[in-house]
Amino acid sequence: MTSRLRTGLLAVTMLAVGASAASAQATLQKVRDKGELTCGVNTGLAGFSAPDDKGNWTGLDVDVCRAVAAAIFKDPAKVKFVPLTAKERFTALQSGEIDVLSRNTTWTMSRDTSAGMSFTGVTYYDGQGFMVKKSLGLKSAKELSGASVCVQTGTTTELNVADYFRKNKMDYKPVVFEKLPETLAAYNAGRCDVYTSDASQLYATRLTLGDPAEHVVLPDVISKEPLGPAVRQGDAQWGNIVRWVFFALVNAEELGVTAKNIDEMAQGQNPEIKRLLGKEGEFGKGIGLDVDWGYQAIKSVGNYGEMFERNVGEGSRLKIARGQNALWTDGGLQYAPPVR
Ligand SMILES: N[C@@H](CCC(=O)N[C@@H](CS)C(=O)NCC(=O)O)C(=O)O
Image (cartoon, rainbow, N blue to C red):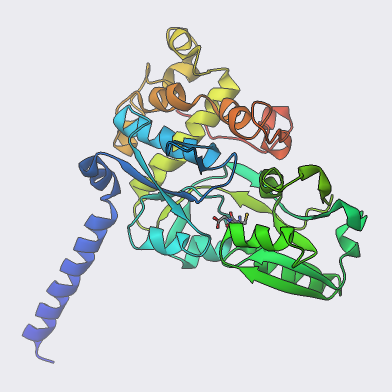
C-alpha cells in the first residue's frame, strides 16, 4: 500500500468514526426536531402500559416516558407510544424506530453489553412466578414436574423456566407463543397447565381471565427481573437524561415532593429540594436541559411513589404491595443518587 493511499484510508476512517460519534450523541436533538419522544411500550399490560378506547396510554412504563418528555418539552403529552411485542422490542431500539424502550424489560448482562443498548435504571423490581388453575390444588412450583408450561418467546421468562426445571431435575413441556393474547388464550383453554411470566404480569393478566378467582399465583419466585428503561448504546447524554429523570422521581418521593405540593416545596429552604427543582445550581446543563427539568418531570407524573400507587398499587386494580419497590428508607430497594 502506498503511503498516500494509507493516509487517504486513515482520513476516511477518521471521518467515519467522527460521523458515528456525532450521530451517537444526537438523540436529544433528533427528539427536539421531531417535537416528540418516541417510546417503545408493551402492546397492552395493565398497570405498565395499556391504551384506553380513545388511544390514551397509561401505566408505570408509560409515565417514565411522559416524565422524560416533560423534562425536555415541559409537556408530558409530547410522546408517541409504539406498542411492541417481546420479540420486536430490541430491533425497534437498535434501528432507531424508538428513542427509548420502556416495556417491562429485564436488565440482563447480555442485553446491556451485547445487544447495542444500555439500561438506565430499575423502575420496578420483579421476579418470575407461576400461575395455575386453583382446581389443580397445587401449593408450590416444586410440584410442577411433568407440567406443560405456556410461555412467551424472546423473554427471560423462557430461559428461566428452562433453568428452573433443569436445576430441580423436573421435566416440563414448553408451549411457546410470540404474543401475550395467544399465550393467555392457550392457558385459559387448558392447552397448558401453567402460565409463567414476571409476577407483576401474572397479577395484571389474571384480571383479564374469565374468573380471576379460579387462578392462583404460586408463592415461588424463581428469578430476579429488574425491569427498566433502555436506550441505544453510544449516546451518553441521552442515557443520562433517561437515568436522571427517573432518579428525580425517586428523590422526590424521598424528599416528600409530590405533584400537588411541588410549587410550595420549590419556595422552601431545603437545599436538596431546591437543587432537584432547579431553584439552586444548574443541574440541567450536564444533560442538555433547562434548570427546571426535574420540576417538570415530577409536576407531570408525580413522584415515584405516586406513580406506583396510581398505576400498580393501592390506587389501581392490581393492588400490588410496594415490597422491594419501596424506598430504601422504608426497607425497599429503590435508591437514587443525589442531585448535587
Ligand atoms: N421481563 C421479561 C419478560 C417481558 C415480557 O415481554 N413478558 C411478556 C409476558 S406477559 C409480555 O409482556 N408480553 C406482552 C406482549 O408481548 O405484548 C423480559 O424482559 O424478557
